[in-house]
Length: 482
Ligand SMILES: C[S@@+](CC[C@H](N)C(=O)[O-])C[C@H]1O[C@@H](n2cnc3c(N)ncnc32)[C@H](O)[C@@H]1O
Image 1 (cartoon, protein in one colour):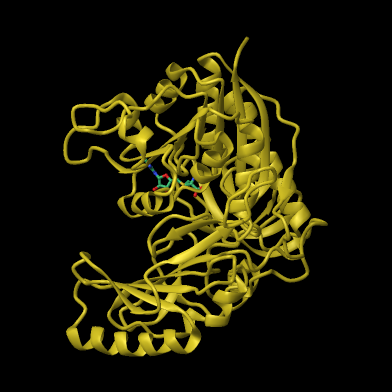
Image 2 (tube, helix red, strand yellow; image 1 turned 180 degrees about the vertical axis):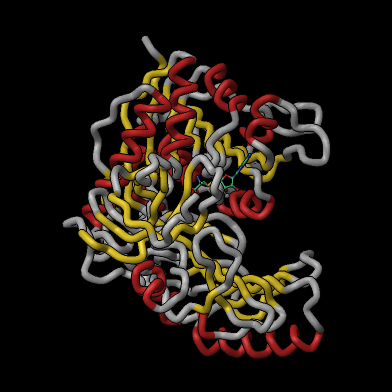
């Protein structure tokens, strides 16, 4: 048997879900190749090549024939696979489309969304992937959230794709300017295992959150606290820390949260002229600086809410869509929001406490909708202290029961919604479902399941909220078949 040549020379064919281009070896074996473009002839370093494996994986290390969409220079040199190979190191993960111009990236994403909807939901989609508002020409500067891991010596770094190796970072062009200005990767974090940085898109005070290692020594923590506390004051940044026993979060500088704001979508008004959300250091918030506005507008347009409507906001996060829906339905309507993360649901409780017609429940969506909320992992009311919330139907644990919805908004994590969630939504009989998806495969699968239950896919809008990566966001509107 002849050994597999590495690098292999391969002609790249179609884009596949997950950021790969599909190629075949002369023997017909499928190879999923990153950092290439359809049509290109490239040399591929195999990163995963089990002799008996049904497919292999690899990275482009040299381009022999470039496709027209290839950029002259990668948006993030440390994530450039060709440059990395020339220096004998792996590329950092997180910008696997950064070698292509934005138009080409969006075309690849369009094909993936269309393919997943056709294959998994039997729906032929002919839409396009829209750029986020105010996108930069090279799709940089959008990440308002960034996470770094910390090596034992205190150096912060990032990982290559599918690797545990931690490599130092010298810059991160996808990060918002406020994060780049802080350059958290240049700090040392002895005693910590992870760092999360958040910079609100309104330019308000950013926050750096360190998660201390379980074995952090007292003197390390004291030194880190003093140094980062002083650094935070100097840079106008808040600094928080999760204790080594994971039980407490301390504030070392500034405040213990960030504040995100949004002008209410057209036609809706607030006394303050803007909507405000508190987001805790480990709480969920959309990452692209324009994502909250882009998605809130798209959800609202698809939902066509009427005064007095009842809305479910499933997987509500800190209450982005709940707050907008609460304005749209007015106080003769109601919003029933469900969020599973204790931290994020506490943020939602805080953010929605002013709205008496919002009922919030902390718990697993499937459990809350099916009424299986008993036991330690069960739900609990976390917000909506007003009259309507107080009078909501409750189960034997005191958790509010979902009211009959007119519209269901659901924004599940990457894995999509559980089958029983889709069944419960279907059985609740809303007039429409607005499904927000960050994974086209999960969207295709769940839309397929809903179609088999008699729902019709009316529209899908896709947004490029993760430029220079393969990720894409979509908002789908489903209505009951007549
Ligand atoms: C994609 S985020 C959407 C959040 C929100 N719609 C927004 O745009 O800010 C998904 C949220 O679902 C929550 N979540 C994940 N799995 C859940 C589950 N099984 N039950 C309840 N919430 C869940 C996560 O904590 C996260 O806040």
